[in-house]
Length: 140
Length: 140
Length: 140
Image (cartoon, rainbow over all chains, first blue to last red; front, side):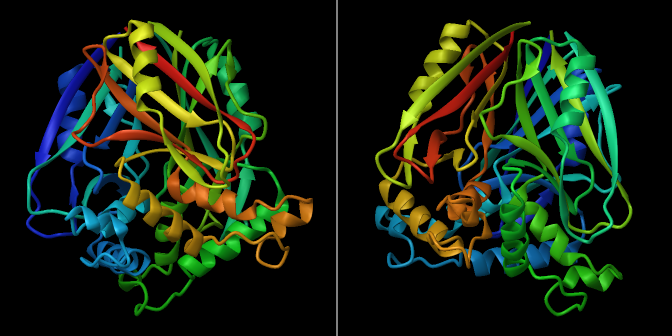
């Protein structure tokens, strides 16, 4: 069994945004030399997500509005008891649960085995500081 | 390390519906000959889900109503900017995020290592055309 | 390839609660002797979750309130057709979909490869009876 472990770092200038990281993950799959296996990609921070969907700006705008409705940003301590810790990111911990922490992608013939529109995104919900994503690939 | 890669195709006559695919996945686990490992099952389309829950028609009816409330079907472009692309499936991209893209299931003694009621479902949110599910099994 | 399979049992006295199980999973990673690999942790019951977030009581209180708003407990059969089966846990099947069934965590140098605040939780949504969590570790 072979494995590869990498941590990517992102510093997103907005509080909430989505970045297509498919190319970076594909490069790591190539670097691993693994032909058949699994690729785990996960946010290492609990106010961020890694998810797979469409690279379409209108959809991303929709996601932002929808997440803001489901778990609105509110720095006070009434809506989010979490903010009593001195944080203002209670909303981000909720948005991340909707969008998920991780994806696991099949590797077949040395490549990410994707459907036609699948792209991997880093989802940031409390940005403006460096945060990490883990890529772990195992296989042969 | 052994591996097996298969793509299943589904053509669901309704816009939204759930199909129990546990038997098909179990058959592939048997075909792989893998005794100990992991089985990834994921939708290859970004308006569909693979998830694990109960095979109970009332629950599936509840899920449909709940998802319709959280992300209602609306072919216009006010609620979903995504529909400006000419698509009418903005809602489906949202429903899929709630229900998830994938499941990873343990294989123990050559079988899916399931709790008493766990069943794997393909969740379709923009049906009436052929769409694929990936099954990737690795182990020994 | 090496593997380890364990089932943990939890009997949560409340209907809904979250328990930090990181230490138990870490012990199993050590027991497995696996240095590089993947660790799957999943609920084996369909009214429970395994998820990764912060071990902060205010946040957990927020999650409970939020989940109760998204999928309120209601033992009747109007809101949840699932309750026509004689169950009263329709809400729990919905809460579990928001929080997810499973996490997959990288193992690097014999340890869970975690970000600074990542902790693994068992999320119970229909407690007061014994329920199981699966831990499956594969690697070398």
